[in-house]
Image 1 (cartoon, one colour):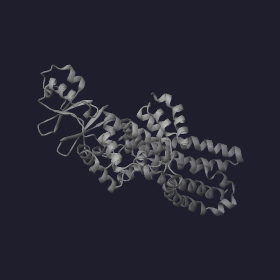
Image 2: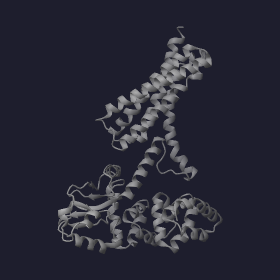
Image 3: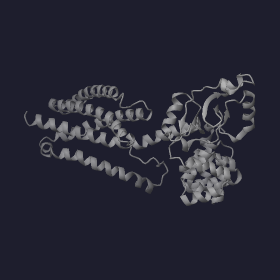
Image 4: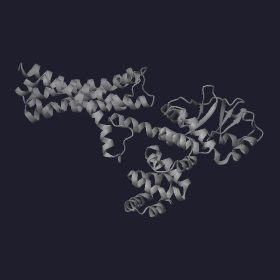
Length: 453
């Protein structure tokens, strides 16, 4: 059933689950696509999600496994935790090896061993092989079910072997060609295969220049390669160039979503595992440490203001306009920071072209500073009728937006050089710089001007 028809059904399932009518909910879910089932289950609380899922896996293991795969380990692991090890093993055997490995990795070590021991030998071996690779690498997200043929295989034999392989393979977008030692030597598309004469060997029609990744390649780099070269799949090789797996475009889309979510959350100082229905206590525990860090940096800005406490007491109007400068500069800095972090994530920004990026952002910052400085200065003059105050705001705004542009460009690059995720820590430094600079310029200029005129 198409996704556009599920909102009303999703509401019905939620109402049935809330009333404990789980079998009636199952009858609706059993007619939906696995992705739609995952979407509906993901909106339920963990207890209701487990109870609603139970009739589904007891009556249609294949559909339940597909839905669980779409749900992902983060929201699907609590469902598995309510099952016996035998039931979990039965589930994981229905999943693709890379998906099964993701679920197993989220389980306690002692339970991992018990579940892998209960799985069929072949499936267990595939999962164990994937678990040896670090998280967020090509080796962890690849499927070992890759279709490859020797270079002396004819077109006719290739088609026959492809037909015989059947459902045991991951989606076949390309035919990978290997030598007698299993080393990757070429690739060809299904279209090329079907258009050539049956007796033609693959070595004559294959493309020898193959875009590939190694098992330790970061998953973000994998997604960039697939996007840059418009690939449907990319082969994975080991250190000896032996073909060991393939990563298909559906897995790459998941990586892109994961990386985008991670960067967005980290820019906001949030834990990447937090979701809408994360329990309040858990959300509190994940958020409060970052807020404490921000509190420390806020006191730096407060310390600057404290140096001008007597000036503010003498000219109270300063307190009215004082927050405007760091607030606008902070927003401008975050704009620059977001562009820079995205550029780093997509491989567009490096130290080699950072000067060009810096010049561009500085020009934008200066332009913004002129426009916003004139505007805020004019508003201040109309409001309070004091041209000096308007001039102070304009100058402080101009200087602080310049700092925001510089810091928003250089901080993420510097953190990347230090092997620190720019999305995680950049906002603290940029916000602190704009706050301190904003207060220092506004109050410092105010002290210089107002005490002399």
